[in-house]
Image 1 (cartoon, rainbow, N blue to C red):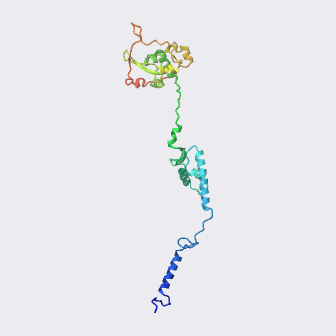
Image 2: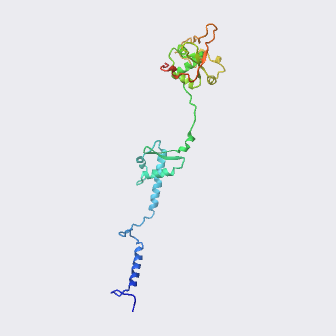
Image 3: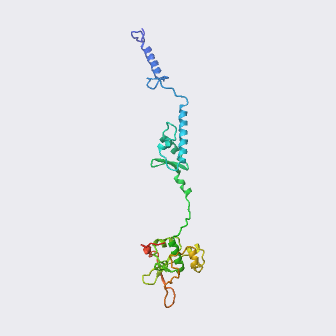
Length: 271
């Protein structure tokens, strides 16, 4: 008597188990021509399609790079899209270019929603340049400088007496910034006004070995350092002197912290 029971069709249980196993293996095999759900045939990959996509992106990046380099101002994505092949998103191109140039000498950066190439921040020092920019003195500054040079030590009131017009704070500031004029001291007269004189820098700049080498009045006019605003005689009445000795009145040293920059405030030069 067989120990293997059979169903009504005469199949044993072992035969049925083997059949189920075979069907399970067949179900696990991929079905060519169908999608993952098995509902419809999956489209076969188009030969060379991936290569075409890569070529289109490479062309788009070259175009974008050329446009961005040639532009003198940042470019927005909409403007850039006009230069790209159809179907290419400008945002994708910009992201790829930005990543490609991240460690280069120039980088693609976004500024206010627009894009441009600019020098990498850590290389900015290569373009730093120090220049000496010559300052053009105004006529008022030239005249004031000439009066200080010829009449030093001289006060503001004495400068105005020669020029015939008020002297502004800015005029003397320019001459002091140039290193040609300095406050010398405070004269021992009522009000103790500050006096001004020239510096060694003035002598060096104008090639003078001493103040005695200064040109005469006519040479000064010809050089444009003295205009018709100043009196024709330009013979300064002279720094106040001691009536007994004839010596220039003594001065007290002026402390830099004591010097008031508002000395000339509220005055304007007239050219």
